[in-house]
Picture 1 (cartoon, one colour):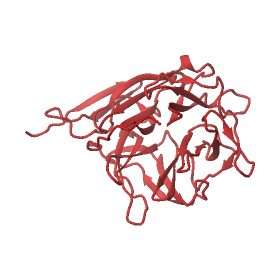
Picture 2 (cartoon, one colour; picture 1 turned 180 degrees about the horizontal axis):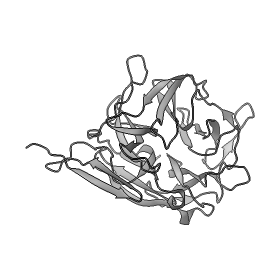
Picture 3 (cartoon, helix red, strand yellow; picture 1 turned 90 degrees about the vertical axis):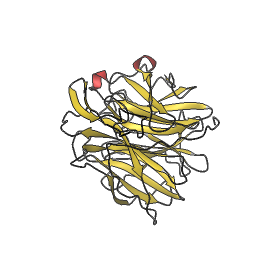
Picture 4 (cartoon, helix red, strand yellow; picture 1 turned 60 degrees about the vertical axis):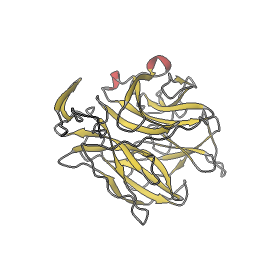
Length: 335
């Protein structure tokens, strides 16, 4: 039987856009892009206990951006929404602009780091916070009652954090907006930062053309540091990367791997990467702006395959409307 596709319109807030639905006859064969309905950005993807999860920003005007939803899938194709896994009710110091989650599993708990209040000076309350839950779907509760990082240091606005666990078990956080990126060392409980061996606490690791959205991936012994370039509200938003021998860098820019395509979408950026069930099977999870949309908050979450070439470089990603095929993972134990 032939599979048919339906073109339908989604309207949320001030945005309206036509999207490609998945097959309406027979079983769903691919995820489709976007992978779920609604305006969502800055997706943080992770595999928890053999299940895929995406924690995105709820993309809306800052005054309405006061909660986070999450989405789970057994196979990357069929997604279940978990509404309000974190919300203003559980963050006493949140006023507006809750965004860019970073998630990790440790200490038999689940940690969700977030940015809040979009501070512009060190006299304002806001920055990077941390919340904790006993289950991936939450509810997550603010663990500190204040920001973990609430100051502008080395010129980096405290936003867009990513927590990376190295092979020796040490966790590091990379973060920063305003074209500056800092790196800090996390305490074992992930609720505080501690000095590096040289006595410093904040190391600037900003690569060429960096704007925001850092991400770290280790592959075949090398450290792949990735980030977003361009303006998040514009069509030229994109992802670039560097390769280093150490989590401290230096990170020399290699080039772009994800950017707008005139027949697909614009503003493709602020991504994360997850490994599929196969031996060297990788996926990039990112947001993009559908063609014809100009409102900054009109962003959708998408997934496409990401490949390494024989020399270890990342091949440019081809955006699609189809998305990805199923890739079920086996269950694992909570660590």
